[in-house]
Amino acid sequence: MSHTATAPFITVLSDPTPACTYGLSRTPAKLTNSTPTRSMGLGPVLPLTSFENVLYFLFSVLLATVIVFLNASVFSSILLCRSLRAENRCMYMLSTCLSDVCSGVAYYYCGALDVRDSYDSPTRTFYIAPTFLGLSYMAILAAQADRYHAVTSPLRYALRMSRGRTLAVIAAYWLYAFVIVAVNNLVTVGIAKSVTSIGTFVGNIFTVIIMIGLNVRLFFIAKYQLEREPPTAERESKRASIYLIVVVAVCFLIAWLPIFLHIIVCNFTGTTCYSFRNEGTDPLRLLPRLNAVLTPVLYIRGCAALKHTLLTRVWRASCCRAKG
Image (tube, rainbow, N blue to C red):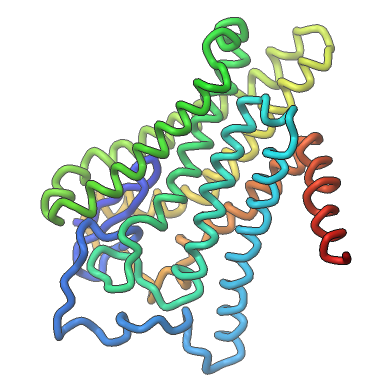
C-alpha cells in the first residue's frame, strides 16, 4: 500500500512499484545496472519534438519564474515597510513567501526537467523540494490560528503574542520540517515507512479538518461578530485581515484537496495510484505550484499598505534602476 505525508509532514511516498509517488526519498536509493537510463538524464520535462511540448516546457520555466518573482516582491515589500513588519500576520506572510520562493527555485528542476521525485529515483531531491510546499501549508494554518486568537481574545493575544513569540513559532515549524527531512534521509526506508505511514496520514486528515473548521469560524466572526462592534478603523482592519486569510486558505484547500483525496482513496482501497511520467506533467502536483502564484497576488490585493509599498518602493525602484 502506498502511504503519504503532506504538510505539515511534507511529503508523499510510495513503494517502489509504480504507485502514487509524491515527495522525496527516505534514503538514497542505490543505483544498479537495472536503473532506467532515462531517469539518469536531466532532459526537459517533455521531449522537445513538437510545438506543444516546447510550449509546455516554456510554461514550466515561466511558472517557476513567476513564483519566484511575485513571492520575492512581496517578501521585499514587507521587509521595507516598518508598519508591516510590526504586524504578526505579516510575519506569516514572510514565511509563506520565503518557502514559496524556494519552491519556485526548486520547480526549475522538478517541473521544467524530466524529474521523478520519489525515494527510489536517481533524480530525487532528497525530500527537500516538497518540504517547501509543506512549509507554506504550515504557515497558512498557523496564520489562521493567529487570526482566530487575535479576534476572539484580543487582550490575551496582545499580552501573549509578541513579535518575538510569533517569530519563534515560525522558526519552530521550519526547524521541525527540516529535522523531519534529516531523519528521513538518515534512517532506512523500512524504518521511515513504519514510523510515518499511519501517523502522517492521520495527521494530514486532521490538519485539513482543522483548517476547514478555522475557516468557517473565522468567516462567521468576520461576517456577524464584528458587525456588533462600533464602526472603527480597527474593526475594518480586523475584518480585512480575517477575510484575507480566509480567502488564502480556501484557495490553498482548493489546490491541495485533489491530491489529498487522491492519496486517501489509494490508502483506503490499497490500489495503485495512477502515476504520470514525471513531476512536471502531473496536474495534481501542478496545482500547489499554481497556488504559490495565487497566494502573493491575494496578499497584494488584500493589503493596501503592502500594495503601496510594492508599487512605490519595490517595482518602481527596480524599474528606475533598470532605466538608469
